[in-house]
Image (tube, rainbow, N blue to C red):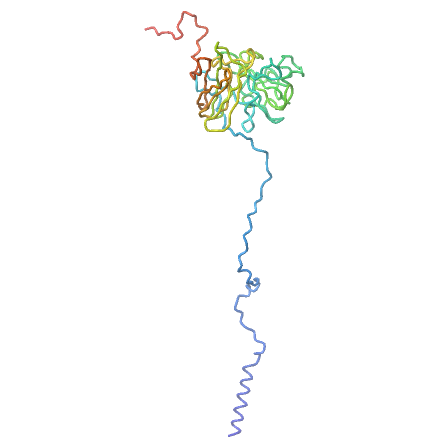
Length: 360
């Protein structure tokens, strides 16, 4: 019995040895896919939310400074709501530039001496800005010497200048526009141009204090003594209007160089304009007979005030889109906002009615 027991013990020992062979270096079955082993090990710090970083923007290089005092586009020309208005011309400087007159250099101002009256409006623009034809017509002057009408005179105060005789007129009278102080002329005498065509470049030739275009409206002759206020001829911005007035003393005579304040009802800015200087160079419109004009006013209510005999007088007016608002003032009589009466036809004989009666 002892032999059998010994043999059984030996057999069991061999069986256990066979079952434990290789256990010292086991190869466990992977618990994740093989490709996932390349992923970085996640640390505990990953669970801490970092402070947010500010947004980073890539900004373009700044361009040119924008034009201030933005204004709407101009009314299309010709534009005339009232029967005697004549907004026939575009402006000589493009809409994306400053194209309105300098406040201190309006029509009828007195500069460079007591007897020199400003016969146009000055529009400031950088040197080399294109100058555009205000309407279609034929170039009748492209040279130095326009002011004195001496071709080639480089001492002329208008410098290099262009004059255009337009394809249309007013009351059967010829219309002209003038563009002075150019640095370059792009047209020649006799050339036909269209509205908006480049006729030259802004400069400071002649009697100037800086680069600008001096713009005039003349009729019926191309002469210094036949100019009219361009702000009654160039189209205003859409939704904006024009103020014109006639201020007289007790004798009905026009008062010269009086300062007038024009204040919007709901704005802090106040506009300043002066009545025309010496008569003869500055002419009143045939219909309005005004002695001051202030263009480019947004539609709305405005207070008009000025000093007369050391007393400040005032009234209120409304500016209408695309129209001329008009008033008169006369000592003892005061303000009147009625428009002038319709002009009569000068060629009618005195014994005939202005409106003929129909015969049965």
